[in-house]
Structures are given as structure tokens and as C-alpha cells.
Length: 455
Image (cartoon, helix red, strand yellow):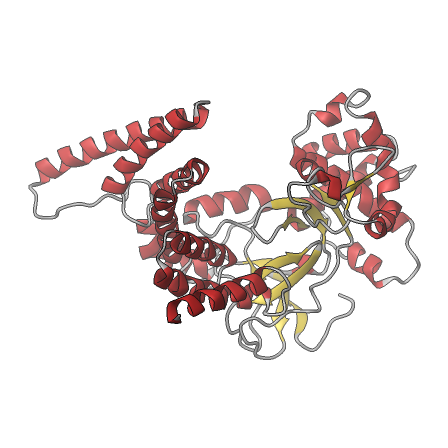
């Protein structure tokens, strides 16, 4: 790795491979500057093109008129002439291609947008590498990315990629393209907005040095396209720095299947096999029901059979709600499913959590703030249980922030202050107090609410 500082060093460890190690004790909220920074290459998700700048990923809000549009391809947009000029070195290679879609490249147009983004990202990386200045540190970091043998899948994608005019430099071999795509399966990053929505895909070679853990001590966040890596708890000298590749709110078996299928390894981390993992996993299952141990066994078996039947019926209601086009009817179906799962499932039930999330979204759409507040409070309860080993997880912080807003809008200022205090503490650890957007706004809102309480 090039440009390292005294905060970390790299070493090989048995069973872990190349690891990032803390060279000294690190406090929560410490930025790992050696791994943070601008991407080697980055590309917007296709669905984000009309809403944000292709260079810095800032969002224009509801006004598309605030964005400048590329006059050639008419697909990419920019917040300023400066951003448009800075992106041209990369965009010029794909501009002609985007003009031709979908007529001349139907196979490319029919791919899922995540795959499209990966192909465009690979093209940008290859073009930058082809134009490299000898000895450039960023190119050396890119060359050090883990490379994988191409699979039949990446070979097929590479065949599509090199067939598209301008996507990759002239003369790029299919296997070269396929090897990069294979590496991306393990080392590319989904670029997230402040609200954790996916807005792009990026290649960050230094950050790719971090290994996975389901009990991470680091988290990632993005200032536009610039990646920041921060510690989310105290880290001892000599401890490996890790972030999570998986959804930590998912049960262990779901996380492990995802990691096995996507990254090709069996997770043996503390979050999966540590002292707290077993009891937590027993609660985070679909059939987590309240049971009365005083009942006779036969009666209890019948009760469980009835409850499982109700749970299956609630699952059918959720599926029907997802397919229903009438918003009012979809909400009614979802609330019926939610009633069953609130009655039968405990607060750490994954099935109930997803039902609460769906009901929360529909309540917001319907303008029912009280129902939205109740659902959001249950979502926060679930995440606080599921992420008890990662109390400063950014997802929990963002949900606390949302719950605080709902408390305030429903007139419960005291509850809003209590929830926002927890959110602000975690946001400052995850994002840094210097973060110009989310942390600043949350801090200002907290002071405003505190003032209302004392007025």
C-alpha cells in the first residue's frame, strides 16, 4: 500500500491473509486516513443519473433544472461546469456508447443496473490505467488489488463489455476485462448517500485491504464520492481493522450464506461465533413466538401449530400487499399482517422487522405520522437488539434520527430530544463532527429541540 501513515500497518495473518492492523490504540471516531480518500474510478447507478451530479454525486433535489446535462449523450448530469470538466476524461469514453443505447446494444441495456454499473466502472478503471503516468501511487494501488481467475460468468460479462464501442481501451483482451470484474466481486464498493441509499459503484483500492467481520470496528461513509473510514469503537494496538460486507441485522445463517455465495469464504468471526452470538441468533428467527411453559405439552403443540398457520397467512398478506396497486388496499393488507406478527413475534423477530419496515413506509406515504412513529420505534428496537455489538452502527443512528423527527412532529419533544441525543452521538462517531451535512443538521436540530424544552 502506498501513502500509509503511522496509524496502521499491513501484515499477513494465518487464516486471514493480508490484514490491516492498528499500529497504536485508536479512539472511537478515528479516521483511518491512509485508507480513506477519492476513488480510483467511480460511476453513478443508472437510476441516479437524473437526480444527481455524475462527478460529485450531489443531489439536486426535485429540480432537474439545477443540473447541467451532457449535450452529447443527454444522459449524464452535473451540478457545475467544473464537475462536468473534471468528469470528461472518463465520461468521453462512454459518452458515445450511452448515445447509442438502447438501439444498438440491446444486450447491454437489458442487464440489471448493478451489472451495468460494474461494467462501466471496469471500463473507467481500464481507461485510467491505460493513461497512467509511470510511478503514480494510485495506479500502483490499483495494480495491487486482489485478482481472481475469471469465472464463466465474468467471462460472459467481459464479452459484452469489450464488444461495446469505447467502453474499454482498444486492444483490451476479454480475459483482462474478466479478471477485473472477478476482482470487483470482492473489492468494489457500493457508494451510499448520507441516508444509506445506493447511488453509485466505486473502486477504492486502499479501502479494499480491509477484511470482513460481523463484529466490525470500522464503518464506511461517503462525502459525495470521497470514502471515509472511521473506527466505531475503541481499537487496541495490534487489533485487525475490519468492516462488514454483509447486513448485520440479518440472522447469522443469512449473513453466512451471502458471504459464501458472494465472496467465497466461510465467516468465523466474533459476530458469528462469539459469546453473544448464540442467544441473539435464537431470537432473530421467523418463528420467535411467545410461549407459555405452564401449558400442557399437547396444548402447547396445538398452540404452536395455530400460530405457525397464522404466520404463514401473514406472509401471504405481505406478498399480496407488495403486488397490490391500490395504495389504500396495500396498506390495509400490510396492517393485517403486522397485527399478527406483533401479537405472535417478539421484538427481535426478523419477519416482524420487515413487516414493520413496510408498514412504516406506507404510513409515511399516507401521512399517518402516529402509525409511522410506532413502526419506526419498533424498527429502532429491533436494530438496537440486532446491532447490540455495534452500538454506533450508522443504520441505527439514522433510524434514531428519523424517530426523533417523528416524535417532534407528533408533539413529543422530550422523546425527540432523548432519541436525537443517541443519534447525534453515533453520527459523530460514524461521520465525524466535521461532516458538513448530516451531523451538522442533526446537531442544530438537537439544540433547537432542547431550546423548546427549556422555553
